[in-house]
Length: 115
Length: 118
Image (cartoon, rainbow over all chains, first blue to last red; front, side, top):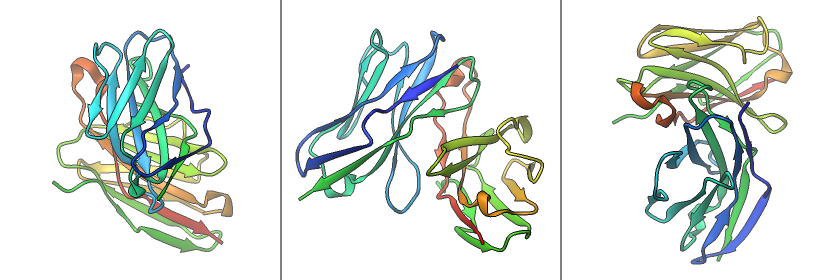
């Protein structure tokens, strides 16, 4: 079975600072993908970044980077230079070979960016 | 390119009524997913299709829920009869499968339908 754990229900950060959102995962599959999604108050789910289990380098997408530590089974999202518009719920998710096409989601972390 | 389109965005209905949610996936995508999001249970996969064929409906809560995908560009999720506990946000998502590494495929979500059953 696959499991995603996000231990931070809420995080606060000041504008222009960096913030790390934690995600740990559990799977016995050697092949898997890790995803982060952002859900602002408007409700839509926005794909942010992807990391594959065989990728040698950490994924980056603009201000988003994924700190992938395979041995620790962690895939933390790092947001650099936080902006007010980053205030949202953030979900970590995983997809495995044995899980076919299904995504397993964590419970999410609410990020609030203050001026 | 247009993203995943869902309609309606908001639906308020009374208990016992039939509700139909609609989804248009991204053109060319061959997987379509229906999710439900509630505060208590988070995001749950209800059912998914591959090339219009239902693959796994084990997440469908009960027989009151049904989903169809008559063609590659349209899917419906129907609840009949609806109950107050069905109140949730329902998301549709689609992805394009790359057979060599299916677990890398990114699912793109629609804006969701917020359903309230009174």
